[in-house]
Image 1 (cartoon, rainbow, N blue to C red):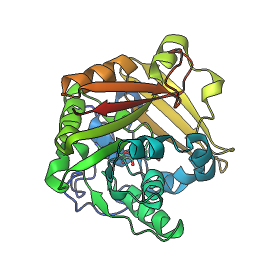
Image 2: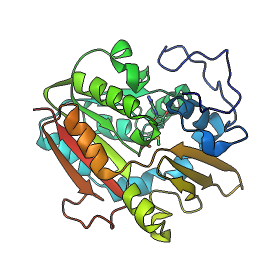
Image 3: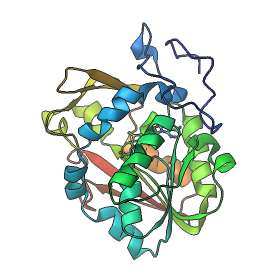
Length: 285
Ligand code: SAM
């Protein structure tokens, strides 16, 4: 990827080496032309400390807990899942939830800042000790060992991969780390609706805290740039790839998953324009 225009920090190791210095990137860096930043490696420059600290205001845990209910827990339990790899741990919401419910959980993220925050959250929400691994999905097998009953990649995280090659590589790594009858759960924002119909305000506050707004600032077929505004007037951005639902389903099938069920806002019947989020459940056998 040559599209990164921000100043790069040559002293920080690439993600996945497991040695990245915490808080290596204090400020977000998008350079002179933020719309040209369409690069999978850029996520570590986006989830900087200031943003990570605010992330849990953005994603109000209590509200999220209520809106999500037992969807993922019931799904995993109904399939006899015992071990779960949380591939996109972030600040740890799902890892903590899984530990609470007794799942054997390993928590992965490519951002050391996120893992540090998740570890802290694990301790404050119930005294859990998270088993964290700093790894990039594209080289997951190098850093994480063993096979899992389920892998989850939630919170619209897969959207950070900007090339099809990276998406295929990631899905191949996930596939390889599942047991023969394992399942992969990936969610995504409903980009089809935004690309085709524009962005409705109904979507603006989804999964946010009361005083935080998440709005698309720019959108084309290859980039969805969102702006997150906080009560203290600080603003952060994320550059994401607008994944179409059927494209993700096709990729999942093509890397070998046998059956893919897609839910819309946690329901199995929905009209395509309605949901804010889709959840794909892919079965290996
Ligand atoms: N799952 C959490 C949640 O729902 O609150 C976090 C979601 S956050 C939007 C996306 C996370 O994915 C970030 O913590 C980011 O560091 C991580 N991430 C993005 N691309 C990654 C990659 N290629 N390898 C590993 N982690 C990645």
